[in-house]
Image (cartoon, rainbow, N blue to C red; front, side):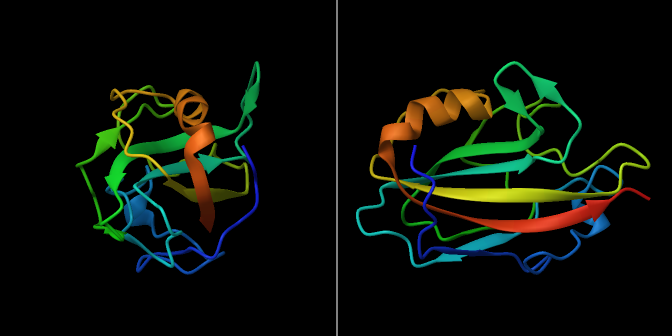
Amino acid sequence: MGFALSDMTLTSTAFERGEKIPTKHTGEGEDVSPALAWTDQAEGTKSFALICHDPDAPLVKPGTFGFVHWVLYGIPASVNELPEGVGNYVQGVNDFGKPGYGGPMPPAGHGTHHYFFWLLALDADLDLAPGLTMWELLEKIETHVIAMNRLVGTYTRS
């Protein structure tokens, strides 16, 4: 998969790029996904996938690192925003072992972590089964990714 960022812009009304994710959207709060919106989708986009990953998490497994907080896919190209606490579309499995969103919850005393919300534009409307991990999803969509960008927020556990 190519790693070039596109002109898509991903934003949130909950936090600014590089800023703290509010407690409401973490495991210490209500643990609901933040509202997200995007502009400038790539020509030819048929669907979107979204991933939230914490590369700062002290977790290393064979072939991977960090912690996956959210895997969401099957988002139609006509959609350009997700409301807070979105529950529709196809939910993958996060590293908590559950479907849907699991907010930031770094180990106590581990400092500030960075949370990468990745939006991927796909050139196909793939009919993928629910429950894929981030790595399973990436394997299935790799040849269909035509654009991507990210929004990064931070969180330090109280």
